[in-house]
Length: 246
Image (cartoon, rainbow, N blue to C red; front, side, top):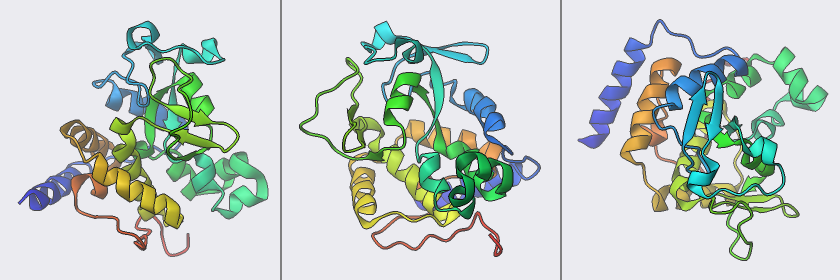
């Protein structure tokens, strides 16, 4: 019954959003993301309250016990983080091989769509966004926290970032969505990790509500949140966001 409920909800959202267009570029996506995420008003990785002053997001660092590791100036602002880094989805495109991210933005419409995909954008404390960089997600049991009470860990030598348990499932479902929609490769190790995180941190009501708000702008939901699709080891991405020529 729950499956059909989410399926019907997704169809209604698609119909109601038929005349809307997904953001065409990253700048448009950031503006829309602020409107979508403002009701939560907390940063993704550290769960710090956010106060908005126009387009600027200011995290309440004292309130959440955050301590700047190195860059206090960047820690004092909210940035829009690609959960699946631009490097991950970009380097699988020929445009990246020919000239990196700038070249992709100029020449590749698929890259621009991936860069602007609202499901892959979350509000993050700027310093954490910078420290995460394009590092892969993982678990670092022997690494100490470096950002005060913020429950993230970074191994800069191994290039691994450990997120808080409460967002691990969200991260997994974002990766499943991006890989499925744009026919992106996930290593076997990544799949195993994210499948485990998906099970350990199941979808919450807040995540469902966010999924619906984004769907009103994108014209479709994240099927791994609504339950329409399930990722299993060896899942073959459908590439439904691409045309035959892409």
